[in-house]
Length: 517
Image: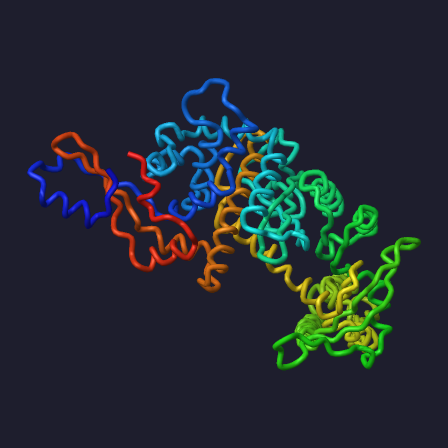
């Protein structure tokens, strides 16, 4: 019997029998997650690719469903998931026996999941597109790294490499994430050795997208590490398009510096009171004897001011460091010319140190030091302030090109969600297969998280985040009663009017609709 708390209390007042047992379990945000996981057919898809040899206990789909819920609500190491599961109404809502959600069972589920990661992810992504009308024609692609605790001496995937988490001493996996531009839905990823360079990752990622999702057409939006001659050739030869920023190599700097400021025209945005950007166009050679593509040179006046101010502050520090050397010249160790040259070299390190010209003269005990601002170098650098180059194969207006590229925050925010909310590295695992399966399972969790956010915003709830919704629903509990007659009674503690309104807007049922006695 499933009742709300008020109805159960009213019924109990009319009963002559007493309540002989009472216990509680958390429901919380499972109310928000279960309808989405069912709509995406995550459990069924996993079970289709990973069938059980013996039809008993949890299926692989149930085990991974429990792990997804844990990642989203309260990320914990595998050996704590069972303890967490016993506090939640997993059995009553999802039919998942908490006593079977132990670390060994979850590890076996990850093992079963590993060979089918790409197929399962693609099928779930296609389900999401069909169910929620998602449009991934414009795809923001970005790379990141996930570091792990531990030595992992025999791992081929966990390697030391360029760390985006500022953890150069930690072994990591490199990750490429694909997110739809319109609503920020992550629908496919790739995991790579921690020392694999971005250009090779991007090429493999494009091939995987084509093979698994089989899109008729998509436009890849990428950053400076993405747009290379090889990437552009692969996309164009496959009738796909691209849009992205170029690295400011010396030839590109020379191109930008050669453009007179008067050639830049204001870029208008709908609803904007003033133009934030100016632009002009040039043909760009991606590489010597490579492809010539359309380039949009973008000039942000605000960023130009910031670049100039930042450079002046840094230059002031460099000059101060030189002044400190000159103030103690021919004193102590600074009597020696070789030591003065060493200190000058240290002060000149970095890109701003090169903006000061220095002369060291004289002999030991009579060393001279002159330094001054390199005005010509400063003038050349000032020509680049606030400017960058976007290249593209689409014939959109400059305004749309710039606006689309600025939309890269959607993929950056999803990476932030994954790293800060889903806690991949809180789990220590043995073996590359389980590490990669855990990463892939976390991407599925991120998909569920993102779909909830999209549905909330579509329903008129404003710029609410999934984390805000989880917090709002955290106190919903299930009260389990046993009456004197032995009759069990499940009571959902009263859902607030605000919670009920959210569920109604999302098109989700009230919690008691899920409860299984």
